[in-house]
Length: 158
Length: 158
DNA sequence: AACAGTAATTAGAATTATTCCAATTACAAG
DNA sequence: CTTGTAATTGGAATAATTCTAATTACTGTT
Image (cartoon, each protein chain N blue to C red):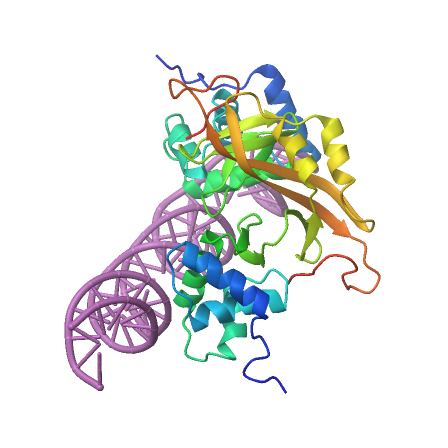
């Protein structure tokens, strides 16, 4: 049975979160903990709605607005990345390392793809002078050939 | 003074369009001409609304729905690319060559950045096996240092 | 030129993700 | 325990886009 703390933040994550919030002059709250925790517990790029239903299990009174607020806060603090694909609902993933995304056209799932730092640097060299990129976003689109409809290396998403 | 044909399609573009439409079993129409023409005439990544107002000058009765329809048609035919940035309105650019986009945070403008074929190939090699990408999307985010608020090499956007 | 069949266009309603708002609640510091 | 600020809330509001159900325009055929 899932205890009230099945998604409790590991000590390290908790510190990461509280530090980041403090650095931004924001408070640590139960909802922010829960939401960050739910993202870490299941790294499948959920939408705000999906986070909402997951988190409601542990905080039944939470509102969707709060989920949006908290997610936005986490993004601002650099702990979470917002991932957009066309006009679909924004999805969220805990950041940690630089990576690209692979969008499977067939299933709609999103997979993380490791993106080495030196590749990022090389890409930035494509920019004509005068253009300073502080970040970049790389998305692949195609089909992943998975035998049993299950992810192998990368993390799946709805 | 702008004549009724100030945005008339150059012969080559007209052929490109009609061929692409024919290949997809679609008809050439005045509206499709106008919209494709307006994109080519000013390559500044306009939104559907912006295309709407531009095209209304020459076809005052055109509806926004038609603009959306035509843009979608052009995208399907591979003549135009839809560009998304976060949750902003989709912007459209005539395709022609493989390229990345640079989003200027300050102005919101989008610039095209040439993306050599061999770089694309190299990037696809980042994918673990089992993942077949048929296309990729590369977006830079940052600030462009332009002296007079005017584009130098790349094409500006609203 | 009239006809049939399909495709394109239209105006406006409907949808959807997200943001805004004004009111309440929860903390944190003095 | 007050007081100020930040967080949360539910519901209304927004904005881009899509859908719908007609109408209109072509295309190819007689």
